[in-house]
Amino acid sequence: MRVALVSGNREKLPYVVIPFGLLYVAASIPDRHDRIFVDLCFEDDPKAALASRLSEFGPDVVALGMRNIQNSDYSGSSNVIQYYKELIDTIREAIDVPIVMGGAGFSVMPAELMEKLRPDFGISGEAEEAFPALLEALDRGGSGFDAIPCLHRFEEGRLISNSAAPGFLDMRKLIRPDRSVIDPRYFSESGIESLQTKRGCPLRCDYCTYPIIEGRIGRTRDPEDIVDELERLSAHPGVNHVFIVDSVFNLPRKHAKAVCQEMIDRGTRLPWTCYINPLGFDAELADLMRRAGCAGMEVGSDSGSDAILKRLRKGFSTEQIRNLHRLAIEYELPDCHTFLLGTPGEDFDDVRRTLDFIVDLDPFSAILMAWVDDYEALDADLARERRVLRDKILEVLDAEKHKFPWWSIPSLGVNYSAELFSTLREHGLRGPLWQHLRGPAAGQTPHRRRRRTAVRQ
Figure (cartoon, rainbow, N blue to C red):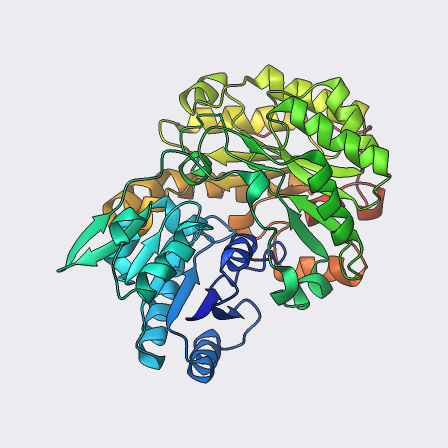
């Protein structure tokens, strides 16, 4: 069969991110199938480019990857869903073949998106085995759909969704992502590659979709294999930074330490950043990460209120956030904390408490998001209800933004714009750009000597 894999993502803020999940799926397709990779990220007219490539290639099936529901500023889910509807319309106008949707964004709400967007098929969660199985079923004329885990399809107008498989995929048996199809502009614009050391997250954060996509049991790769891949990435002339895309790098902690030790033993030099959780973070790991070349860590702290952290089922306390930050300073690991303001159950006093906490914590960087529920894109009443508190939060952040020049507030464009990021790149700065918003080079106080300013009540 002739297979067209389409990466629909066009988000470039804060930097372009390679379509990692679809690359894994591309690598899993047996060689007997012809394939093309259509990446719409850099196209001036994505719909025209898509129609042209499909007409030229003449595929038997089109796989459309949906990376996100939300825009990077955490406020544009309606626009994203409409954009994918237009892509599906474009595909249908260009060629009459089955359309299969998948990806992390699709997996968040597969039934709802099947009804809204009306592709022929959808695959939620991991697709490295399910998509080749679907190709085989289509090649046989349409038999065997019932045996494919997490497959969604319509029969006589009714949505049929297959159950998940008993277990998730073994990371040690997966073929590495097919990087041969990556557009070189990913590296010329950001220089950032992606690396995955495990899948699965044991945490139970109330809003998080990682367990839906990857499961709750951590499935790790061998440290030797991980560093083999890292060394290959280092050899690419355009790659100067790696982001480890695990939901949480340091859980399980033993595996994270083994990966760092393998990097140290081999003397790898490529700087990297990762997601870190206050749970499972200790001085030994901080020291290993620093020695292994870690350039920074991103922390989903979410709230400065222990009551809200408990409601969100984060599993850690504000004191554990503080402990992580103390270790970050001691071992010179820049820490960027993301806070979600106005989550379900919060009132404005909770928001104020979090703002005061951020001021007192004074992390290397902070990203402040006004909470948006994914389902607001499909429920106008919910969107209106949530918008009341969100608008009040953004009003306060807008009034206070001048006090904290290193905070990023994406919804307000504070330290978060194409112009700023372009300027930083033009000055040769690489890696996640929050790492360059504070410190002597940015005209701010260094990491170890910082002022304390109270949020105005």
